[in-house]
Amino acid sequence: DAGITQSPRHKVTETGTPVTLRCHQTENHRYMYWYRQDPGHGLRLIHYSYGVKDTDKGEVSDGYSVSRSKTEDFLLTLESATSSQTSVYFCAISGPAGVNEQFFGPGTRLTVL
Amino acid sequence: DQQVKQNSPSLSVQEGRISILNCDYTNSMFDYFLWYKKYPAEGPTFLISISSIKDKNEDGRFTVFLNKSAKHLSLHIVPSQPGDSAVYFCAANPSGTYKYIFGTGTRLKVLA
Image 1 (cartoon, rainbow over the protein chains, first blue to last red):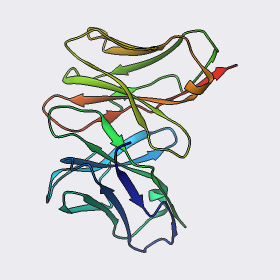
Image 2: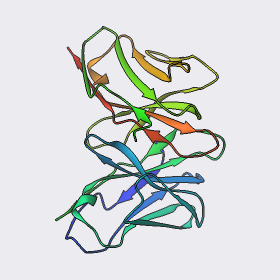
Image 3: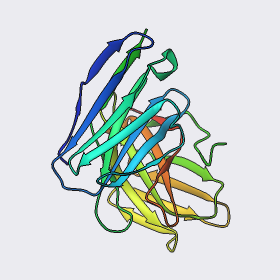
């Protein structure tokens, strides 16, 4: 299995609080992604990174920011969490050349009350 | 606007029979397609992929077919096994990008 971990695995927070989710990889892959999974919507891309300090927006980026200061870490921040951001968040990585399959982390279940 | 569509939210199949999962897309600039399987409380795992220059790719019990003119792909699982019960997502890669656009998923249940 690809070495991808996510932390925390579960989190309950209140509306208006900041939240940071962490994705850590040991594969040295260039590309990293954050998705959210919601019933009826499948997996939707929030942000992705194509290198250290290089990031771009996905389909549902409003309310989220990301940072990547090291190859192995990709952070997703909800500056002021809202109930609509209650979801399961998945991090993924993909390889260095061409279009490769993505390897997903185990997910973080976030509940915003 | 959903660019990748899986119109069947669920599918039930008897063990040993064929499972056919369908996926439609709207963007002719997609040039690589992938299928993922997802069990509850786990991340999706890669299953099989196909490039737009091909119309078929096979890997063991799994075969993916691509019909570019119809903008349609399908995943065939033969024979289906109870362990195949999961949610299946198709995904597409727009040409020249490293983004992937996923469908909404189809829940497959293989009945023993």
